[in-house]
Image 1 (cartoon, helix red, strand yellow):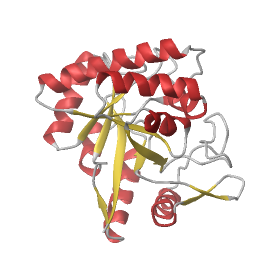
Image 2 (cartoon, one colour):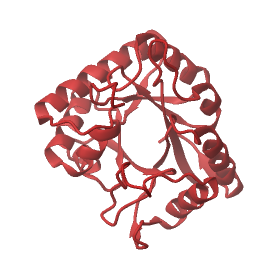
Image 3 (cartoon, helix red, strand yellow):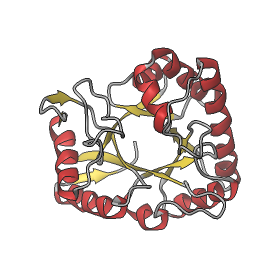
Image 4 (cartoon, one colour):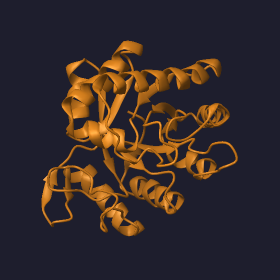
Length: 251
């Protein structure tokens, strides 16, 4: 039986601001990437989201990003590899504290937003992130864009890696995601999202915005929790995978 991980970015509320439908989404995923207080989230939200994941036996991952709440971590920020190492180590440690306190175990690390996209193509940045993960716990799994520098860096340091693909994003010919400021970046139609997911799992291929089919490896599928379509997409994908006899299980 085929197997795939469904992951979702969660815990992105902070203070009096509420984002994402975490309680509705948690039943349809197998792993959660929890914001660590830089691009979103705060200590109380981290604690509550960790508890929610543990209650539903969902694997927990740290979701470190740029210290940029105003830009939701999606703005490009010039950063050195040393700085990337420091902020990733700091955020993993913060979330791991809550996971340990609640009797759980941290499962993976998935960089967020601009940090993720930059590290996907920047070898030195990717290796700094992989090194931070390796130093804190070499058993953690590094989630990175399929076929990216992040995956290569994780493999270089002996980390377990998970090639990530996206249900709600489109692709460029080089395998990178279409930038969010471009019109065709997001997939808003649930049927299109399901078709893309099934194609990536079954054929290891995805269609780019330019109409070219490229190779891709799908170990884990991301559904963005802050998307207005998140719950609907999650349900449709969950039931489509069951219909096609594809088991949903964490990496």
